Length: 383
Ligand SMILES: *Cc1c(COP(=O)(O)O)cnc(C)c1O
Image (cartoon, rainbow, N blue to C red; front, side):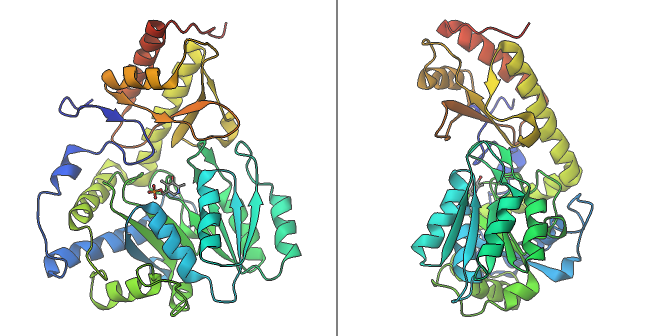
C-alpha cells in the first residue's frame, strides 16, 4: 500500500487511484483550448478501441461503427442522458433488474414518463432467458431493452451477452449499464450485441469521479436527433458538439478529471490492457474469497455468477459483530470497506478494483482476522 495515502478504498468507486493519475490533475486548462480538446478526442478514440479491437473479447466490431460521448456528472447522469435521449417519443423500454442499479434505470424511465416494462428478479438470481423471451414476445411495443452488466449491489455478473443475443433476435435496441465492469472485463460492443454501453471515469479505468461516457452504435445515435427530454442531458447534441468542434463539450467540462482519465487510460494500456487488468482483479478477488472462507466467512452469491469486481460477504453469525464498529476499526488500520445494499440478508462489500494489488489483499485478510478477534467475534472455519 502506498505509504502516502491515508487508506485504501475497497469500494466500487470512487476508488484508490495511482499517484500519477492524481498528479495529472495539476494543470489548469481552458475548455476551448486545442491542447485540452485534443486530449478529449484522444480519450474518445481510446474508449472506442477498448470497446472494439482492444476489448480482449473474441468478437470485436470495427471502431468506425461506434462513437463515444462524454457526459458531465456521476455515472447515473450518463444513464439518465442515455435513457432520456435514445428512446423515441413512441418507444418503450424493458428494464431487466436484479438489484439497486437495475431499479435505478427503471426509476429514471418512470421519472421521464417513458413507457416501461420491468422484469424484476431476486437480487441473488440472474435473469431467466426464457422468461425474458416471453416478455419480449408478449409486448411488441417494446423498442429498447436495458440491463446492468455487473450488478454492483451484490457483485452479480449478469449474462449480458446471452441477453444481447435474444434482444437482437427480437430486433430491439440494447442498452448496457457496464458502469462497474467496463475496463475490468473483456467485452466488446459486438460480443454483448450492445448498441449503447455506459460507464464512468471512476470505476475500472481507475480515474477520478466527475464524468461518465456512452459508447454508441454510430448509426443508432445518429437517428436520435431531437428525441432528448432535457437540454443538459441531450446525448445527441453533446455528441455533435464533440464531433464538430473536435473534442469540445457543451457547457463547462471537468477539465482536471479529464486529464486524470487520459492518464488512467495510458496506465491501463501500460498494464497490458483489459485482459491484464481483468487478471489482476481476478487474482484480487480469488485471494480475498479464499482467505475469507478460511476464516469462516460466507459469501452471498454462488461462485458461478460472481463477478471479480466486488464481493458481498454475509455478516458473521455473532452478536459481537456490529458493522459500524468493524468498519471503524478496519479504517483505523487503513482499509475502507463498503456497506451492503441487499435487502434479504445482512452483508458488507469489498471492492476488488482500483489501484489495489494482491499483496494489499493478503494484508487485508490478515487485518480482518485480527479485527474480528479484537471484537471477540468467533467464527467456525471449515474443517
Ligand atoms: C457506480 C454505478 C452506477 C453509477 O453510480 P454513480 O454513483 O452515479 O456514479 C450505475 N450503475 C452501476 C452498476 C454502478 O456500479
